[in-house]
Image (tube, rainbow, N blue to C red; front, side, top):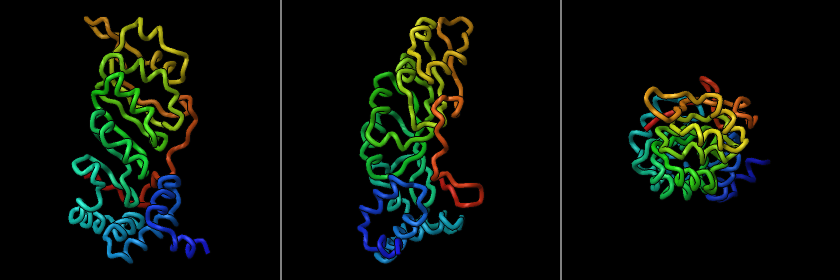
Length: 228
């Protein structure tokens, strides 16, 4: 009954439903069937990844990458899960230029940014759709960015990986957030430098947010991840 009703939904409506409920296998199956009815190879790609057909999924991606990757992310380093982009590695500038629009339409579980400044993080963490991000990696943060990060509670993030520096006075002035408390515990002095260095991976409940992993994360052997 539900499948029959879903088959009458439009592709944009189904895509929005998948963005909101990324663990709903039935939604992706119907979306794939509707794509196949239109002769769209993305339908076969979704089926191949969802059913663990690794070789077929890789071949389809090699042939139709330009079609599977959203135009906004045409040159991006992305990973697919169940036929949709699951993770994205990019720069803050690229994310702010393209990412917010992408997040409004597609489920994205993991984001990796390199070299983010304080102002970058302020806009990234406030972006529409950021609540879908469950794994956030921040590499080579500019000075001052950790202080900005510590002002946010990050309720949707269950894995946070950070690397950056801050002054002891900045660390002492951090607000009493879960992120700030964890940063204070792992900060280490650097020989010959007034800055403290922080490089750590936090996971809930250690992060203090108590969020379970994103349901689109597949158990081992249940699907296929393809990085491009």
